[in-house]
Amino acid sequence: MITGAVHLHGQVEVDGILYNLYTSGSGQNAVGDSARIIGANPEYTGTAIPESITAEYKYYTIVGYDGNHRPVYDWVTRYLTYRVTSMRFNAFRGSKISSFSAPDNIGLVDVYGNPTNKLTFSHCTNLKSAIVPSTATNLDSTFAYCSELTSVNIPNSVTSLNNTFGDCI
Image (tube, rainbow, N blue to C red; front, side):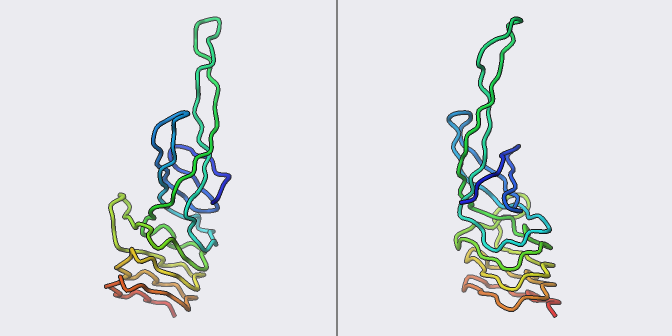
């Protein structure tokens, strides 16, 4: 579990990874549902996708009224835990990630949030190893331009490998 993030406008960056957060309820009844990985800082060098993250969730309550009968607000901070359930297929493209592993059941989505079977790490020139989750079936051009790549674990679910390792020399 990773902590220390601030939840702003449904997005949060934790240790170089940008997540969309999905919350049920609001205020004191808010519950962290899920988090989707949507990108990575180009300088990201981490290796494993966490199963959950903890983010700061802020809301306000009315604590009284001033002399002009206007409400006086107080901000309340809570920490919610979100399960990491999916990642955008090109979230790490071009980052400095050196190895990759994720929970095997992580969902893969396109830029619109629709389910996909594609995973992309192209132009990750520091990537040395990857463990592909079983949710991926299409690895077309996935590791193109990954010149340091030496090891990839590919599950039996993969059915398409067109140009998977293109220009990896």
